[in-house]
Length: 188
Image (cartoon, rainbow, N blue to C red; front, side, top):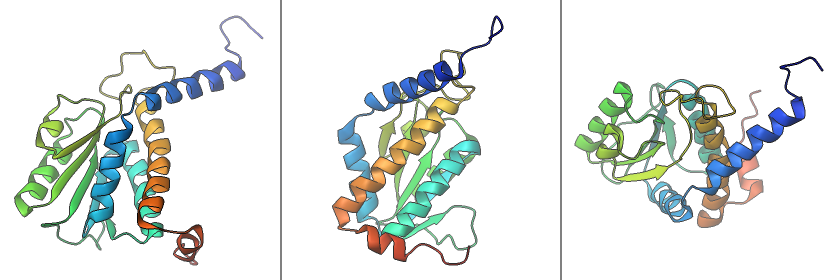
């Protein structure tokens, strides 16, 4: 190996250790409360920007597989939100203008704002009814403290957290793996 080249094993270990450390700091009580909000919602609308959007769309897919009434903001099939609905947004930095505007719209319609963020003192956190804190480096907070580039620590933590939430939600609503599999598309 030439000087300055990092062993690939060290890269994987560093990335996994970092994600594990972030997730170890996530408050499980807040995760459980978020799952209850989602499980009890009449409709769940989800939104995120950039790579966070990719993660939350994957979560929306799994919510659909669980049989929950979910839609992605921006899709033509997104219904109007109102009372007893949840607007679930991810905004690591907590200041994305689109997220702020959508949260205000959800509030005006009577929906509950559930925010996932790395910044508990952000504008989005102030608008949220419930906050799930993910203490990871984001794109806006790229302080080069992360092994991973840019906002990947936050985005990677979202991926794992969302799958854990699917497991918790499945237990909460009594969804079986067979029922989830039956809802998977056959149009691939």
